Length: 402
Ligand code: ACO
Image (tube, rainbow, N blue to C red; front, side, top):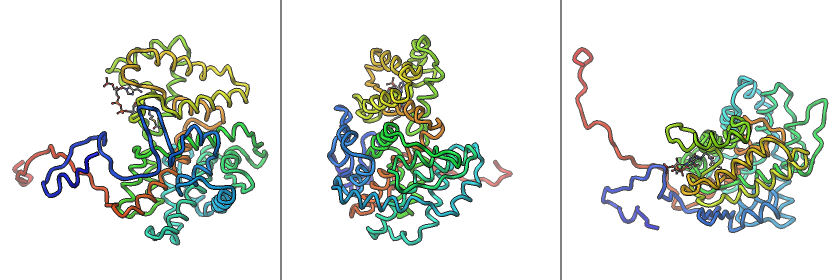
């Protein structure tokens, strides 16, 4: 690792690195990825172990505080988060200003950004307690806002949080209960959602996290920074991939159509990609994809959908791609989104809300990274350089002379 700042200090030189392929913009002790080994660690703990031996609340505590909680610490943390699950009643009016068919991500960018105007008591970002309460508010309120987005889109009344339920069960309740019917908690489904949240909780300096850091580097309000992260996550090359992957499976339709689709993907002029495949960092299997495939199987089993045609299609597509020279030579493997769409669909979550669920999970990663950045004495405002390729100085002629 070369510290370019010291190497080039005062020389006027800088590096050109589109897409930050070779540039680290910060120090971080939160998440470690070894893309070649297919390894993902939160604060040193392998994702495979966290997915089995911890829940999402414990993972949140870990990402935020650096250590897994003991039982007493967990109980206190869960209690604090639970007390912040309600959103201000005025927030309803924000929702009512949107069209019912608005994309959930546009609603979330707006409503999460709007939280900034409600919490004037947590605005001193240099105070660690203020940062902590902002983090808790965000983790607690995201499920409420995501579920409100859904309820508004289908024209049902908003469902208030239930503080006797776990984080994930409460989300399912706010999504699927209505005045005529309670949500009956299904442990397998709740656990599957919890696993989705754990697997998506953080992924070091991906595009949306870098966006949150860049926005936050100016000292901006944390709720506004998270709204910026949500905007970035929306793109199909990032969080929108699970939605795109499921739509792709539906378009392919049947196993017989896979070879023709693969040929289309291999034709660079087609502009078609195999969604849910490939990753900037993982050049081996995405460890989250393995866990998600396992969860997918469990959920379909629980719901009696083992023969689900989309799941079978996904399995076959994966098999064919993993044996195809195009994908092998480019080290393109399934990423977490290849299977998460099928799981979410089975849970009853509409396709357009998939990226919203991702945002709900990633909020802890974003706010933990933001918190780490603000506390870092080396932190500076993010200000990339550019390689200017435009015109040199020229004269502005009056309108009648142009
Ligand atoms: N289908 C077909 N070809 C692909 C795919 C794909 N999914 N992904 C990469 N390639 C090809 C590229 O065309 C390129 O080929 P070339 O060497 O002949 O030019 C080669 O593989 C290298 O790909 P890059 O685009 O350079 O890889 P990069 O690291 O920039 O992109 C990305 C990574 C954006 C994730 C890409 O693989 C992609 O678009 N995948 C599909 C979308 C997706 O699933 N995104 C989810 C990412 S995970 C997440 O956000 C949780």
